[in-house]
Length: 273
Image 1 (cartoon, rainbow, N blue to C red):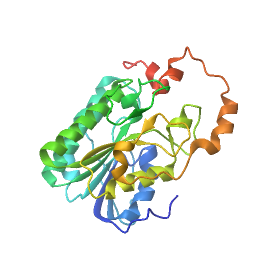
Image 2 (cartoon, rainbow, N blue to C red):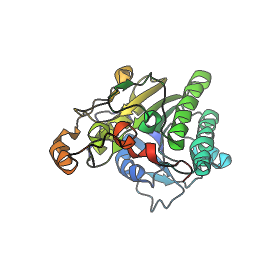
Image 3 (cartoon, helix red, strand yellow):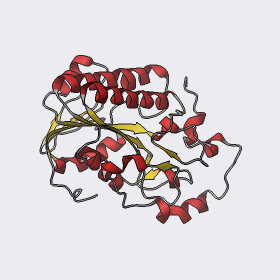
């Protein structure tokens, strides 16, 4: 874990949604140095409040509760919602209705900066032999990817109409280590994820910016040229794991859509399952 990103900037009150999830639990430990008060929210058990924390369990789909959650919040790191391919109804409630509730609450409560956990599954149906940038059209690989594409469009609208700035982070594979050859391209270390989130919070002007969340991997399908102003410079690389990963997965089945498309296994999950 980083001691702290190289910035003296701190927020009076920072909100982290989805704080009980895998990435939320990790960022909960890492974001406290960048704020005086860290407000954490989830529908799941948040445990005990640590020093400088406020615990506020909240249902994203409850508009009134979201208004309360955003009171006196200076910036948001929004990880909340469904994070896998599932049936439409829970995705609709958390990732569509919940996003509208979040941005309406931010508008009415005066919050001006949001870091939105979008996903690489917004572009999951581009092929693995293509390099894409953030200006290219979405090609979502399921209901989950569609919901994240909606979130990016919503962020664009709230920026254009009401001046709420958002960095939509299309997170790749945020894990301690890549698990397969696809992840040699999509992997982002947890330290780099922290660097990216803090850069997104502290960049002077972001408007609505989309950025791919990846480390400095030798194999890459994603071009962040249009997001250079965020100031994110990854320090880690999947290449230190390459030999181990390739030894485990020496063969690629070119008839397997998970090996053809950037979304990997998500392109094969039945969206109604």
